[in-house]
Image 1: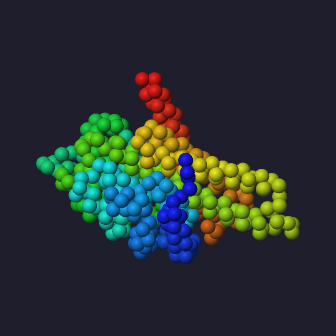
Image 2: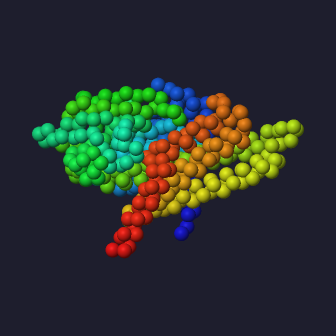
Length: 384
């Protein structure tokens, strides 16, 4: 299999990396991440104008990419720049609308691609512990429409979102896979309360409370009670995006650490000449290449029709990224010494982001267990 990027992807990567290096320097990024909004709407709009959001969608949806490697190219560049703009929400909500939306609902994709609509994925709840099917938020029929009751936790950039994709239970027990329905909820809907706070790794997150939120029949995305498969597809795209973002952050941390080893002196000698540090750095480079291989494998698998192969590749990548990301964070800071802990330096911000990516959409323990369970499921199918 040829893993070299197409010319279009290389051009996209070059232009995006150049834009981030020129317009999104660390000081500017730090100011944006700590701002009242948690991201820059102007920068987000510029990403749209550059075609960055469009690259995440297929031609059928109004974009010009949409493949696994398109997502990987974009998010690796975003990871290098510690970008906080809400492109992850665009990927996940867009995938759900593309997979299950009506023709009228798919018309919303144009505004997402153009950067006019900020979309946010609102699925996690306070006690779900990464279990996709554990949904306590309820949706009940009311005439031709629906009424929502419940809450969602840690919604990235939820305060500034225009549209939420919300999961709610319409039947079954709290952890049943069947009975989950998906709804498109405009941010200004009556009864919806959004409470935001700063995120640990920059930007902002929000808690959503649904107190008798009334929705029309057209808010239901896909068939009633059949949202689990759509959730799996959307979360899968999000996992790949996060893994690629982490890879970009690892590359930035590696580059910073190598530069430090080549310039920092102790006792008049470059510390990069110390054999112990050379060995540690060599081990780190090998681990990062393993992470890259896992991302490539996931990007190649996500477009296949084999669900089990796709989901196993995604969980394998998320597990690898979680383990290696923590290692890169720890080793990079330790090889920098005390200066590696100062917030004025970009490195600790990369380290914090790497650690927090592990906790988005399932940590390494969760995905190791999921990988094993999917392997048993695959074995059962073969036996049958």
